[in-house]
Image 1 (cartoon, rainbow, N blue to C red):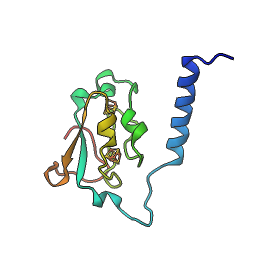
Image 2: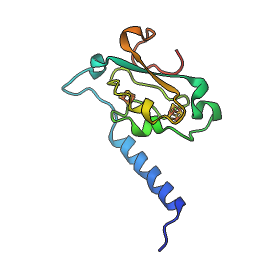
Image 3: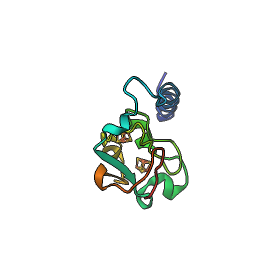
Image 4: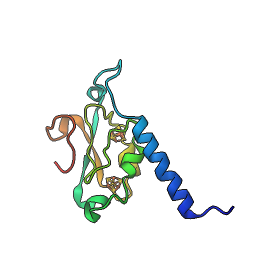
Length: 117
Ligand code: SF4
Ligand code: SF4
């Protein structure tokens, strides 16, 4: 049987869905791990593909975040309670819509907030 691009896309979407359902951020022995963060991701809505299109067409930030602390919403939302500031989301974003800023210089905001600040 010949594999098609549609087969690959379908399997990728299934894998994403399973991953998201298995890896929901939760308080573990380490507690509020976001407190360790020295750099904070912020989103520039004007550069984000899903914001501009209004469709969930990208969300690579959601897919690559090792902590699953980026939501699959429009716009993507960072969960600052658990985000460790690794910067992988910013690295993988194809349009550089995510900027990593020093935590001390970041705009004041509580956990579970995101979008344009
Ligand atoms: S990877 Fe970048 S462009 Fe894609 S949804 Fe995330 S922030 Fe938007
Ligand atoms: S900085 Fe790291 S932990 Fe935080 S949202 Fe981006 S990829 Fe996830």
